[in-house]
Image 1 (cartoon, rainbow, N blue to C red):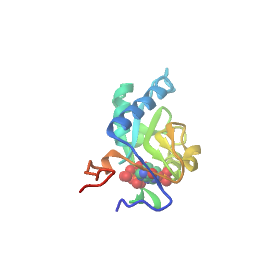
Image 2 (tube, rainbow, N blue to C red):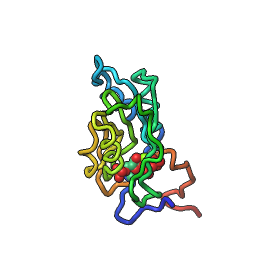
Image 3 (cartoon, rainbow, N blue to C red):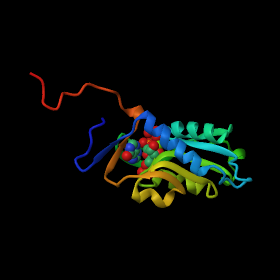
Image 4 (cartoon, rainbow, N blue to C red):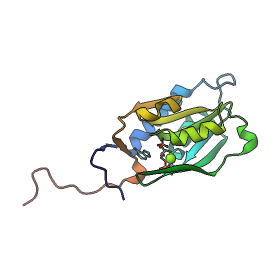
Amino acid sequence: MTERLPHEKGFHISWDQIHRDSRALAWRLDGHGPDDGAWRAIVAITRGGMAPAMIIARELDVRTVDTISVKSYNHQEQTNAVVLKAPDVDMMGDGTGILVIDDLVDSGKTLQLVRDLYPNAHFATVYAKPKGRPMVDTFITEVSQDTWIFFPWDMALQYVEPYRGTD
Ligand SMILES: O=P(O)(O)OC[C@H]1O[C@H](OP(=O)(O)OP(=O)(O)O)[C@H](O)[C@@H]1O
Ligand code: HPA
Ligand SMILES: [Mg+2]
């Protein structure tokens, strides 16, 4: 079900846009790791964080990439956030030098859960809504709380009627 709720505005992101915005995020993070500016590893919050994490890992030449699997939504309905799969324990430590990437922060519940586990990690998202902003250290674009972000992996090109209709 991808119907929008009546109060929601739609912000439709193309593959090109997420690529550009993820690159912009990478460049902003470059040189800000604790180890001579370098990051030890990147952890993507699945599933939405995996596409930006791959782009960022490529830009920053980080080869160690792991995932944390958090589920907090059924379509657009928010449920309790739960960890379904954790990253490598030895690699993570308390999170120092680890860059945790997600596609967006909305209520902040997902990042709160991951932050509690790894308080010293750096948290970055491509997009942020006001409620979740305090949970994220670095992001690129803010949208209003009543905007629903549609990602390219959830969309397809389709025919639209001309503005003036057809005969
Ligand atoms: O700030 P919050 O209110 O917690 O919402 C943000 C999270 O919600 C979405 O993930 P979702 O749980 O829908 O899973 P997915 O990434 O697998 O689509 C999104 O990718 C973020 O991870
Ligand atoms: O605005 C959103 N778009 C897609 N997934 C989401 N998960 C929480 N908020 C959003
Ligand atoms: Mg997600």
